[in-house]
Image 1 (cartoon, rainbow, N blue to C red):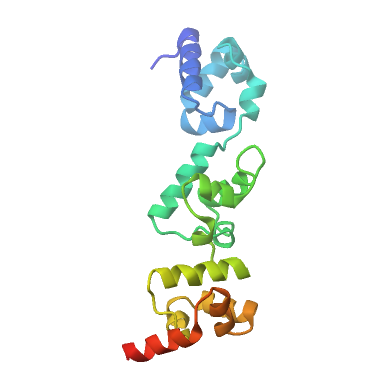
Image 2: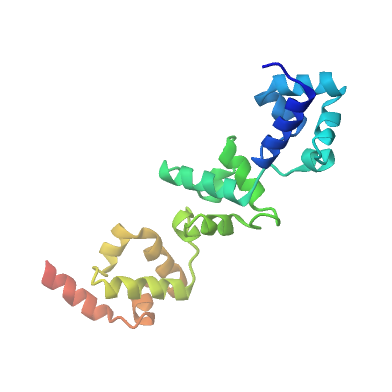
Amino acid sequence: MIWTKERIVAELKRLDKKRVDLSYNKLAKKNQALVSAAAYHFRSYRAAVEKAGLDYATIARRPRWTKLLVIALIKGARRKHQDLNWSSVTKRRDELGKAAFAAIQGRLFGSWDRALHAAGLDSDDVARYRRWSKSTIVFELKSLASDNDDLNSGAVQKTDPGLHAAALRYFGSYDAALRAAKISPSKIRKRRRRRE
């Protein structure tokens, strides 16, 4: 393509409408011919951008990360079954790792948990270690009981060792956690014997 001043201006306007990053370094990586032609015809890339009616200072400071881009990266990683807990994500040196640090900025989500929520994920499901309290333990035990799951100590240790360990830590014993959830430990033991 032969670049003219008119074509350069039109192309810069078109790219700006598509929200392409027009900062010098980013555009030079993707379209060196346009950047070189702009500098040649207008004596500087900045002058070409300004001739196109665009604010060069704004373009130079335009944030790279948007909420939509962060959400897209989170969803893509989830589809690939990648670990999305904060500890794992921040050790990455790829786009997702960079997006995580961008996500916690106030102008985006303010926290990684909020970014996960915006992507339709529950941060507790993503977290490597669930946050336990007496009320969450009681809730989990009641949920298991309503689903008619096996609630004896051995079964819960196998199916949800984190819940069992939290019950011991917060209530002193597994039976005490069951009683707090209004579940009779003796009935749980009887039900287990009948199943055996």
